Image (cartoon, rainbow, N blue to C red):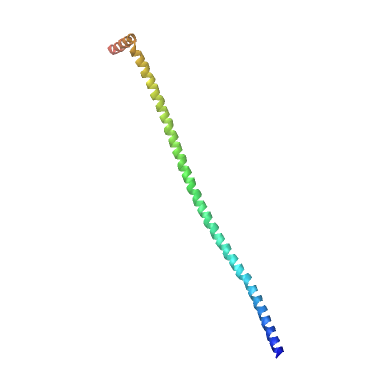
Length: 122
């Protein structure tokens, strides 16, 4: 009977070893499946990030183009404003010169005679 118990224990040990061997043998397949799944998820995430980056780049380029156009418009308007300011300063100088001329009664008389002569000729 002792031999039967020992034989039975040996069979149980062999069964346990075989079970562990089979479990260990199946684990790499599960790990391999898990690795494939992780790789697929990583590829999907990479594709999503690439598409988002591409969209962001397009938006930034569009905004840069609009900013460039706005800067050009502002520069043009400032240039025109500068020219207008120069004309205003020129008119102010001319008015100041006319005012200086009209302050002196003799020059005012000469100017009046000149305009009268010009009107009478026409």
